[in-house]
Amino acid sequence: MTELPPPTLRLALDADALAATWRALDPLSGAAAAGAALKADGYGLGADKVVPVLRDAGARHFFVAHWSEVPDVVAHVPPEQVSVLHGPSHAADVGYARATGVRPVLNSLAQVALWREAAIDTRVVVDERAAIAGTGFGVMALIVGVERGWVPREAALERLMCMLEF
Image (cartoon, rainbow, N blue to C red; front, side, top):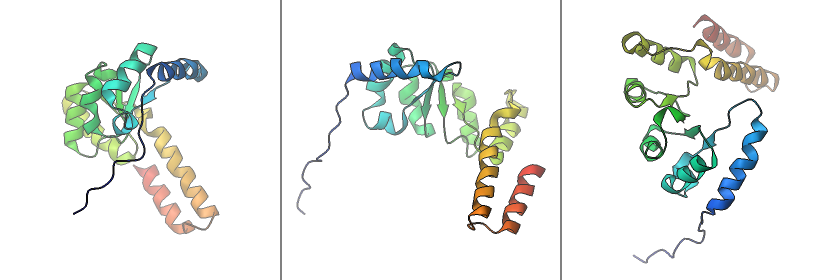
């Protein structure tokens, strides 16, 4: 078989530019804490290169998409500064979050329930507000779906009632 030619796109990390960008954007968050998204291994640049630059520039909150990305980030920052955007899908994720101190982002009522069930045994503090943003988005998505004709009104009402009865 013929070998593929080398990739045409190459990324080079300009650490000074990354640090300057963080320092410029961080104050724009006002009273809210800004966070650095490090998904896909620092967007292909490598967490081992990106995390220290952002940390040294003042970043204190880091977000990854998946649990498998956590070890590369916590090698450079305390685990309580790391959040996993996809949240827990099963008990093993909850156990890993509990053991490492990494924070899961709870995106659905099912994830809240999973976290709650684990909290009974692990004494994890459950923040009841954790799923408000995701639930609010879900309600708005249902409304938009009905208004644009993408979701039948009856189906949206049934789903909304399931959300409210949880």
